Length: 344
Ligand code: BGC
Ligand code: CA
Image 1 (cartoon, rainbow, N blue to C red):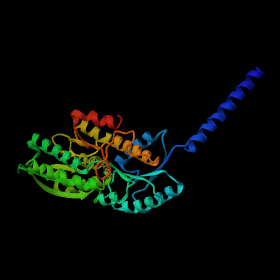
Image 2: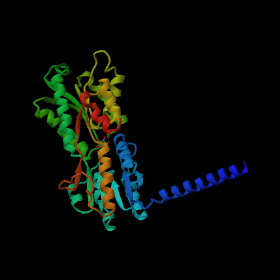
Image 3: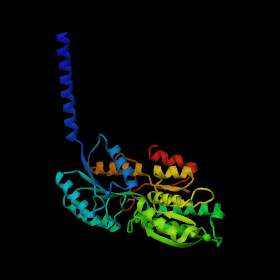
Image 4: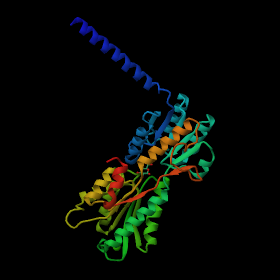
C-alpha cells in the first residue's frame, strides 16, 4: 500500500513537472514568429469577429501580441513603438485613423519591419511608399453597389413601401466613420446604384452613427420624431447601426400590425441574421470576417519569416499590394452563406 502511494506520488510529481515544462515552452513562443496586432477598438461589433478569426488562425503558428487601440491614434502609435521594441517579427495594423498610415509606415521602415494593414485601407500613395506594406480588406465600392441592388430590388417588389405615393423613395442614411473608405464608398455607391436602376430618391437625413448601435439608435429616434412615416427606407453603412435603427423603430411600434420600415445593412453579422429571419431587416452584405482574419494572419506570418507574402496561400494581390475578399448579398434565401462564415 505504501509502495502504491509513493508510486502515485511520483507519477503526480513527474506529471506536474511535465505540464510545467510544456507551459513554459508555449509562453516563450516555442520558436514561433511573433506578430504585433492592433485593432482600432475591441468594442466594434464587426472587428470582434475579425479579431477572433485572427486568433484562431494564429493558433499554434504565431505568438500574437494583441492591442486594443481604444479608438485613439496616439495610443496606437505608442503600442506600435512598444511592439517594435519588444522585437516582433511583423505588424498587423487595423488603423484608428486611415490617414495615420504614413506615421506607422515611417516607424516600421526604420526597422525594416513588414506591416500588413487590414480593414481600414491606407491611401494608394502610402501603400506605394513602402515595399514591405500590404493590405487585407475588400473593395469598398462593391459593398455599396451590392447594397444598392438589394434596396432597388426590394423597393420594386413592394410598391406599397412608397407610402406617400409620390413615386420617390424618401430615405435616411446612417453613415459609418467619415473618412473611412468603406463608409465613404457605401454612402456614395448604395444611393448611386438605386438611382441607376431608375428609382427616384429623396434624402431626408444623412448623418454619421460612427458604425455604432447606440449612436444610430439616438439618430433614428430623432429622425422618427421629426419625419415619422415620411421615412420610407433606412440605409445603414453597417449592421451594428441597422440594429440601432431597428430597436428605435420597434420602440415606436414598428414591426407590429401593419407598421413596417425597410432597412438594409452591411456585414451580415450573426445578430443581423436573426433580424433577417425575424423579418425586421431586408438584407445585408456579407463582409467576410473569417477570410479577412485568415488572410491577415497568412500574410503577416509569411512576411515575418521573410517569405513571399502569398507563399502557400490561395490569395492574390492586386496592383496596390492588396488582398481583396469579395462581398456577398445576403437575404433570407441564402442566409446560410453568412452563417457558415461566422461559424454558426
Ligand atoms: C465594417 C464595420 C466596422 C468597420 C471598422 C467595416 O468594414 O463594415 O462594421 O465598424 O469596418 O473599421
Ligand atoms: Ca415616396
